[in-house]
Length: 405
Image 1 (tube, helix red, strand yellow):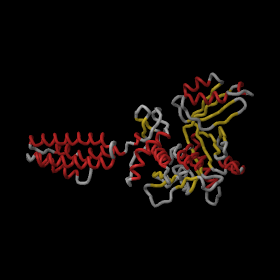
Image 2: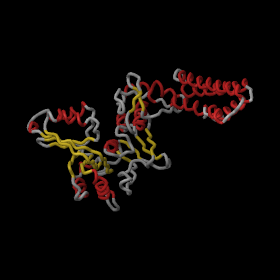
Image 3: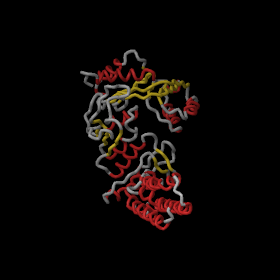
Image 4: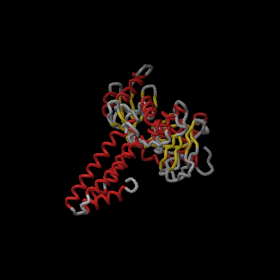
């Protein structure tokens, strides 16, 4: 509630119960005026109009309660609650209006994983957010939610608050984008699995994006993209330790052979095998088009002369995908797999690093191996039950005491 609002409401209840209705209604009007003034200052015209009507209706309800109380002349705990609660109800309406990011974050109409429409976001940000910034005000927008072209509320997936911040930062040409979380920035591994994981003070854009895609939960996988396009540094900081350095994500961070290890469970391996692939064109494309039609992301890919193996962690449309893939060849599915990723911008420059990585996991079975085209990511597919052990061993190899990545 606004400062002093609860005391004012209690006074309204007391005056009404004593039969001093005019005094009580005068108190209601003072609260109405105050909240409408805050609404105008917070939202500005014309955005404040809808919220002002909501606030005024709540004050009308409060006036009706005061009138009823003056007739009864008995101030019960129940009636006192009904009146005192209006302080939070009024402020909640104001806060809700201030956090309506869906008016700015324009998306497509794919619910639960809506894709941002960046040009429209930039236009809305210039029209709705930039004027407040130039006036010296601090606009507050909730993350995660957006609005489809039809005006329907959408969401942009788990971790979408970070992406919302990055989209707005890019749209406004910000000097920096800050992501405040509950850890000390990005680490060399998941500290829940590897207690000796170290903070990373500086990391490159492409490395951070790879780590986010392969299990680093501190960032939404798409968060970095808008910042990369505009060259805006991103800072990941700990809200519980604001004095900490956190992690700076930028294009000029040091180029290391290994920057971090990441892991992601619940992977499903899909293998399509067909002799038609031998010296044929277009079969691999047809396989990936099946996944694209069903809006299912693929993480790791490995190919041979007659087969394509790939992984996904999205089983929502897997049955339909398998039906279509069987028209292209024999299909096999392996569940209970996990992805272990070794990430470093200079990884591809060091053959010995890759040998060390494979040697570090010892007798753990590896089902797939893939080196990204850019040489930044070495990915191993292992049994999910062995992921923590493999990640710990890999981290010890490159970041253990006395080790140099």
